[in-house]
Length: 323
Image 1 (tube, one colour):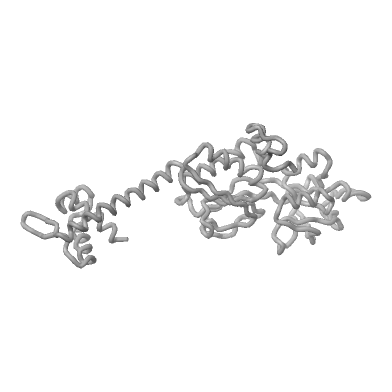
Image 2 (cartoon, one colour):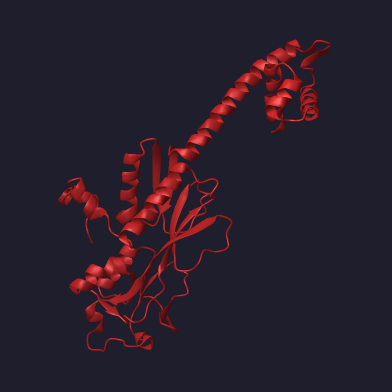
């Protein structure tokens, strides 16, 4: 890339009329500037200037090179202006990856609102359950839930929010037996698991300073919260579920909470991106929108109903039905 820099210096020498004048304007030592011009001539294999008593005079080759360098500098300035605008004003392409359940209740509505307010941004949404390196999929921002800190990686994993989970089951699962009052009483109850199929299935439950690890073989396992919740509702087994997803089920008696004094691990939401330097203005603004959602609601709030009412969507007009 030194060649491009030297071409810029060459253009400046021509425009200012001498190495001395260009040196003063650019605040580069005269000797350094003269050496860079000589290096460019050596690289090109032909002199750019006639060295005469009256100063530097362009050779015919130098005159042609100057015309090309003017165009190169103009294009480079456009690239730098584009980068400045992307850093300061949301614009261009924005690729966001997020968990499906979080997407259908929050991210997809925030994204639609974002595009309405930032018309210069073209956003692409992609749902995924796994942790992706944003660089390998050319994503600007990955939103990812995990039950443990992220592995030691060389991209940014910014912690945004902890989503509490509870143990819940269909009332019929407890028919004819006492509700568990200690974690050890979970033995003998069927359980359903949330995670990859090769997971070491266990819930590390905590109550104050006490902890207990319940290991189980799941009757059903899944990476989808909708499938996990459906299995719990149908009495397949005990499930560890996000409190925000089951509050209505608990209130209506479709599910009962087990061991309310014992808490399963919360799911931690991370914002993953290559580095703070590469985060565009659009990605930064969208991330702020997600953070503001948690600050305003105090948790994960289903935005579907509010947006449906706001835009007059009812019944079959809804994008997706309620659970």
